[in-house]
Every structure is written in structure tokens, then in C-alpha cells.
Length: 327
Ligand SMILES: [Zn+2]
Image (cartoon, rainbow, N blue to C red; front, side):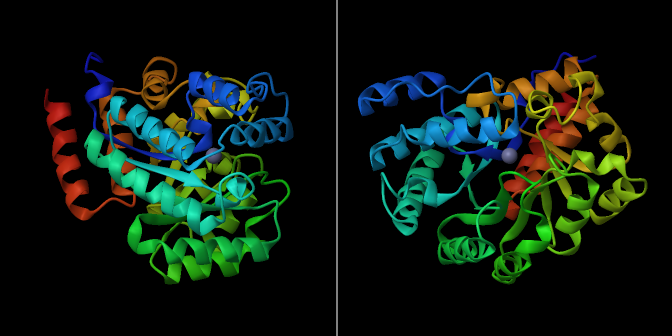
């Protein structure tokens, strides 16, 4: 009995780095327009090579119009996959040299997000994410940026890049400011670093959601703590396999986390670099991780409930998930 259409299961896309959501054909077209070789986005053997490819992909974005196109396509791809809410993350300084200072970049993104959300009939919120390999003072600046745009569509504050370089404990000041301003705390942890980074994200950063977090399973008791706290893990199975966080898709701990009562969402992370989009991750969870429709509906419900969406959107979506299960 796993015949329900996963595209019609209402869901939220909570772990998607904006530039990593670029369509491959858009990368090719924008590189040609910029007069630069198409950046390599496949074949990385380590996180640092992956991260360098990510930054190279950002370099095809040369104008506000390029950014607007990217936002429209990321929102459309999420909507087609059945998302009622998408929460892309952005590190605005990536675009300082070619497009403009962070405030200008945010204004472009927020306006494009509003227009795309209306056009495709879904909600769009933004996660401003600090770079954990930069000075913690830069993270404070990113938190201040997020807070300035809080009433215009920024809903969460994240922390991305190599966990092995920047532990959560360095970023308490930035996250305290963001949380005091009412933003959700949504750092990456438990991906490249082990359970100690998950504990840091909970204790020091007050995480509401953790992007990945899957290595919590390595420490006894931590999974129960996450389940009891209601913190949602924004899980990306394909990304975890391709960056060697787990040895194979069949070994992914998502079923174990769900069985323990941990709220989990499913996400694409960086489809430009990893391949599968949001819907494909749900399909992989069904086919390779043997999640049944009740478990997939639990994931979808968790994603919406833990998102930055309005209470109205959450209530409407929960009813629509009930209807999907009853169909
Ligand atoms: Zn990520």
C-alpha cells in the first residue's frame, strides 16, 4: 500500500542552499552569458572540493536579474515537488563583488521570493546563514542582517560550511541575537562533525531545527533527547551519501530517527551538486529506506510544523496531509 502520489503530499523544503538549487541548464546559460567556463559541479572527493565548487557556481550570478531568475526557479522546482513552503538559505556576502552589498542582495531576494511565491501559490521564507569558517564577528553581522529583514521574509538564522573548522560554541553571540529577535535557530550540525556538534547546537545555539543532525545516532541518549525536545532534523539522504557522512543510502539513520520519535524533514540540500530534488528525496526514502506512507506523512507534517510558515499555513497543510493519507 505505497501507491499514493508523493508529489501531492504537501511538504516544506527547509534545507536548500539557494545557489545549490540552481538548475544545471541555468548554470550553463549564465556561465555563457558571463563569458566564463561552466564551473564543475560534480566529481568532488571531499567537502573542501565540494565547497570550492559551490563558490565557483556562485560566480555565474552577475546581475540582480540572474538572482531573480534563480529564486523563481528554486521556488518553482519546490512547488512542482509538492512544497507549500520553501525556506532557502543565503550567505549574502557571496554576491558582494558581482552584485552588491548584503542589504542590496537581500532586497533583491526578498522581492523575488514574494513574487515567485505568489506566482506559484506557495509560501517563501528565508534563512540567513552565517559561514562557520569565517570570523565569528562576521556571523554577528549576518545575524544583524537577518534581523534587519525579519519583517520582510527572513524567518530563520543558520550556520553553514565545514563543521570540522567552526564548532557551534564559537557562534553563541550571533544566535542569541537572532533568537532574541524571534528568528528560528537552524544551524548545521551532526554532518561532518559528530554528536558533540549536535549537543553544541542544542546547548549553545538553542536550535529549533538542525540541518542534518544525523550523526546524533552515534551517542547513546542523544536521539531521545532530540525526540523529547521536539527539535526537527532537516535531513538530506543523498547529500549524506555523496559526502560520505553515511556509507550507503541503505545505512542512512532516517528510519531509526523516525522510529525514536524524532521530527525529521526531507530535503535536497544542493540539487545542483548532488542530483536529486525534493520529490526524489521522498521517493528515495520510500524505495531505499522503506518508509511507508504514515512515516512519509509524519516527515511532511514535521517539515511544515517546524518551518517559519504562518500558523494558518501550518493548520491548512496539516488538514491537507490528513486528506492525502485518507485518499
Ligand atoms: Zn546544507
